[in-house]
Length: 384
Image (tube, rainbow, N blue to C red):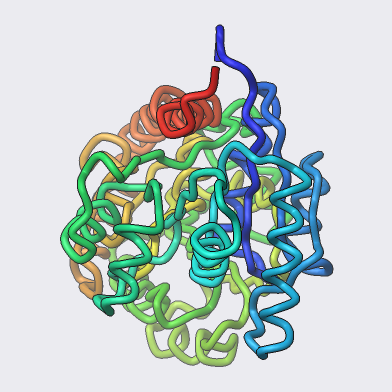
């Protein structure tokens, strides 16, 4: 930022709930604010993003709720947004969800004579953009920059929206790696706290209980691993989201690993460090999603090796054979083979974990993300 003035940035995210996209927005906003930029986070009052943004020391503007589209509320929102632009004089607007994007495009196109550039952030939704003509107009003509979180999203947006590659910026998510304690071995104390034997080789799956996270495939693979790796123990952590604890227990019983599996049902929490400390091998068994795989990044930052499916942006995080092993989705036999191979080589587990931590420090730190985000916005805004 040397020689350039700080930017005034509006982050607009319509969500009430919490997901990887909201986390991405809050984290890089906090990092940009530390670099001297002025950030205003526009999100509905009472939602988790508003709470987390305030906890991060960000200013929050809760004056609009863009999820509802009744005619009266739309008119009110548009007036409020126009007044906000007149009052704050932003250098750039970042819209993180479809509703935010459309609303701000309408305001900038039809209600103000001169407004800041509009950036559409596509960080979390792995689906391809819709090929509707209005969507192409919205992205090609009414949007100044498309910002994506991995090459997987970038290629899809280029192909479907027919965008000039210069109108797309790739900024990977980043972690405050220093905040994560690197532990080359599963902590005996952490295992004891979870009522797991200290000599167990703990294989952890941390994900919401959703069909897209592939729990059934993981449990089938775990049953195969249990027949060849005596010390293997399986830890499943998450919360109900389309798949229930009773479903998991049924699958675990069928796989014959009920006595070697622990299912923890938690609320949505930020700090999983105690659970991660108990894990020797992290697993992502997803069959889709994972545009941002935050848990993969956290495992790597903690120095844990991974077995992951090749979905979303995961192959851009995990280097196959170096920081973990990649397997096709929905193939329990391939997952079981990779898990068994790594569990049988403790020294290799340690080497992979250390390389994963190093990769996070070099390629996916919050400092690197903030620098790349800043450069992309400066190229767009050209402030003096």
